[in-house]
Length: 101
Image (cartoon, rainbow, N blue to C red):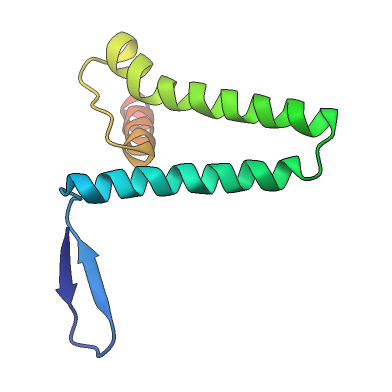
């Protein structure tokens, strides 16, 4: 990851691709911490309905993520290479525009 200094004092622009394995592990761990804190907060007001909705939300988001990177790439369009949610949205936009042409 590069940090590019911008001429305005006190501002900087972060660009590039994260290449440090150590930072990647940190990023993954922070996602885990955010998830655990959110679940803990939700479980403080635990009702059966909240528990069911939480399980369904986690399950459906995981399945959607799997759909984006694996199902599309392996079964729908072998040319598509998943690089994140944004790349999937761009892929859908391009497919839609191709159909209109």
